Image (cartoon, rainbow, N blue to C red; front, side, top):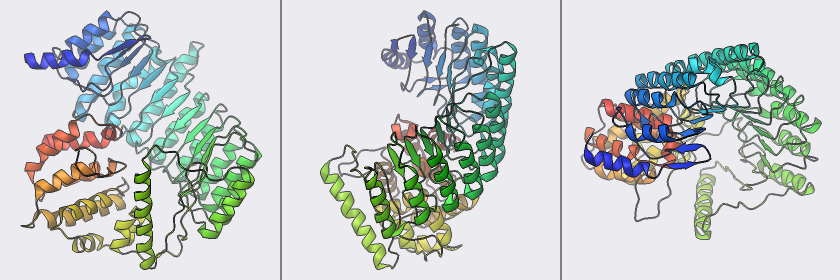
Length: 563
């Protein structure tokens, strides 16, 4: 290890936070490949008496480094909390399971009794679950209360392995008279789908002590939702249910509503973007009206709920004195329905409040002007989509109903992009967007690319449409003699918030779609290989927006590494 690298590592470790039994290396971007790289980290661990919490997130740990860190942990029997999210950035997927096995074996050897295990934002896939399977089945996890596995790409296979391990942990711990009493389970963005969710539901039903379940964006349809609903009914202490961006349909929504009637501690229900539709919304409203007196937040946004059903939901919250937020954004109320909804809530002293975001007034005015311009453009095209901003207590909805679907053109899609609109452009969507984008203008190409990638989903039809449209647009751009590739990558990085600009440019709200789209782009023959090192350098840098999309970030870095 070069002397300058040792100096840099020492400077990073000087920032290490110690206190309250916690040793933190969080966010130091340490690259620990070898045993030598990890010497200073090991020293800190070995010298820390009464270590109860170890934070390794925001670094990258290789197999060899994990082995020697594990050796240091073998004597730390008091360790209770492992904050190990986002600690394999840039690693090959094959490196992660052996690293996890080493660390898990060390905890077992130490006789640790974990309370919290956080492995979120590590793109380890199903094989990675094998890496900590033995740990979950061991006495080290009999005391586990919080398990966080958000954004790990576990898939159906990983979900099944995890479910089996949890059931085995409960069986073994019960045999010793102290059954596993898991309280918080987090596994969003894992592509669990119905089979993975059903397997986990079986485990939840056995455990019975859950207080919070967060499983958004998992591609779960009504069979999986129904299985989860049945399991939740056997967990009477549930306070938070977050299943955002799955697909309930009426069947799943009705099943979940029946379960809600049996739960008395519920504080937060997040079924936003879950397609509960009107029938499902009415069923949920009935459940809310019958009980749920501790309810603080109800999210039924973007669920294709029509006016009468939405009003039924609003009326159901009349006596919910603890309620802080009702979100009905993106549904089909129309202007009259929005006014009726407002009247109902005003009657409950719950009128819409101003958004209390800490932004400059001039920025708010600029955004309002832009929104007015966009709405006017759509009206001129005959679309007439209306949006009403009522953020904190309620957010109401679009003026149009989904059936019959209004026609979509390229300009409409680029103004208000959504997966449905992209698909409704038809099989020639890629050609149409490429034809109607001026590829001699770098800014227009970047804007179009960001709008296309913003609708990216793992669902095959949407993913294929995004990839094909991106290919058509970028092939046309990169093969044009007048297109400036360097200016393109610079502008893209600025819009992603990874590079500062003298001009005031607002970064995209989420990097997940563009990162996944770039992962596809860089593998195509039209992509200039000279841009790969530039892209890699900026995506590797510490960044909060990148940290929230670590699975996509890891995928892109791994692909760039293999080019």
